[in-house]
Image (spheres, rainbow, N blue to C red):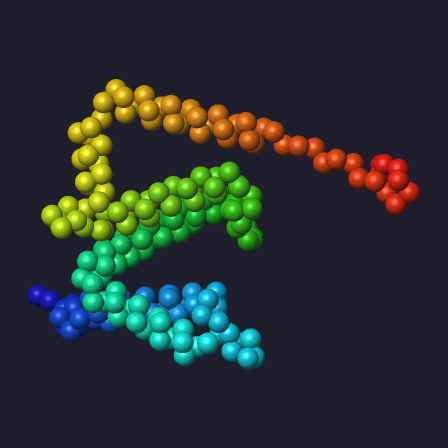
Length: 195
């Protein structure tokens, strides 16, 4: 038996809250905040951003997004998965925080290398979620299309090229990170070298 709350959610879904209203509000808010922060469209005489112009541009962009069914579907598919990823990250940080002393837990400054690794993993996960939510005209997602294409065309040449690319990137990173130049000594006002 469906509860009253689930019936309310079904009513809002039929009403178009999830397909029109919420994507519109999300895109409008993000675009408006971006335009207000960057002040791309100019400033008023008192150095304030042009709110009316920013609001109109954000409104038009949000309306175009809502009018495109594929983009709304991608947003509706992506955001819950990203929220699940955020819950997993917060749960992980809570578990790690159990093993620390009482006080403020600042993982980012205490473990720079781990933080960079997690940022790269999260970026890849969000990119995979986004590619999985964007569909082709055949109904297949970009991620499954790319995976199937890679599996079908995976030959010795592809493996060799990937290995060569990885070795080249690692070699460039080692050379660039290992060649840290020492600061040169400056000269003082009298023309002698500083100690």
